[in-house]
Image 1 (cartoon, one colour):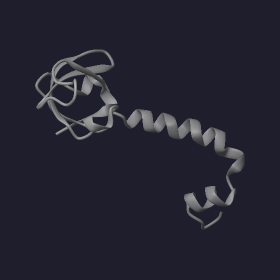
Image 2 (spheres, one colour; image 1 turned 90 degrees about the horizontal axis):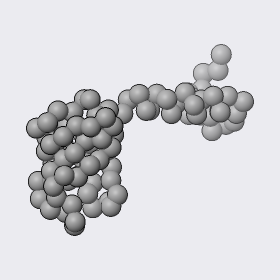
Image 3 (cartoon, helix red, strand yellow; image 1 turned 30 degrees about the vertical axis):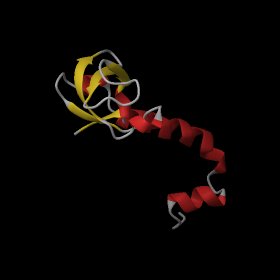
Image 4 (tube, helix red, strand yellow; image 1 turned 90 degrees about the vertical axis):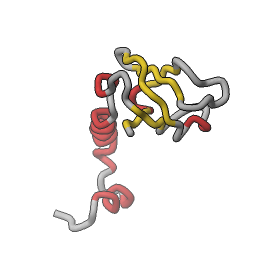
Length: 96
């Protein structure tokens, strides 16, 4: 067994034969860790952690509706054309 850490092994090409499988496994793990809509409730306070347009990143809001994969929020303050009834994928929000 090699003493090198995982990142060093990947960079050196030592794991090239396993890259495709690692990509599938790592993406599945990352998706598993993302919040889903059922983790939110009406009234929850949230912060937008990923958004387009980018000026929405960091904006705080309140959950007003929870759908199957999306969460509807009202922003604390208008941002551009966004303010009320903004629908966002659950993974773009973080409870605060």
